[in-house]
Length: 119
Image (tube, rainbow, N blue to C red; front, side):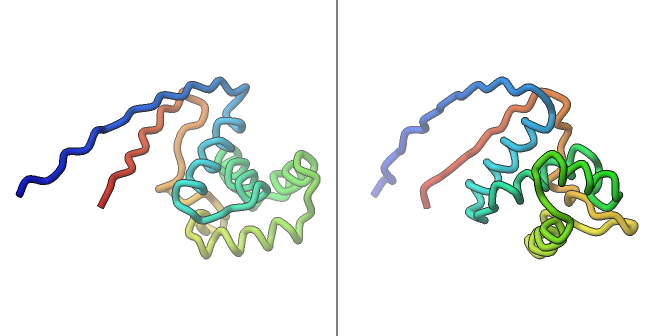
């Protein structure tokens, strides 16, 4: 018996974002949704911010994050702990960074192909 052939549907969505941080926020939001890891909005913001800044270990980066997102250092520490468990953030040479497999160049245009298959 032959397998029923399924159609492949393609949907294109185009977005324009103002800067790399906005692109990173969209990317990590999509990653969270498609991977079903349920990151909070603030966790997405922290990963995106860390990706753009290179790390979240320097005090000036933490201060900038707190100012930009009206957050606090203890909140950052709690999020870092969770994001390290999820392997989105990693400690590299004493610095907390985005894990290399989730780090891309957000200063360039970004095309994402999401392939969702049956079976």
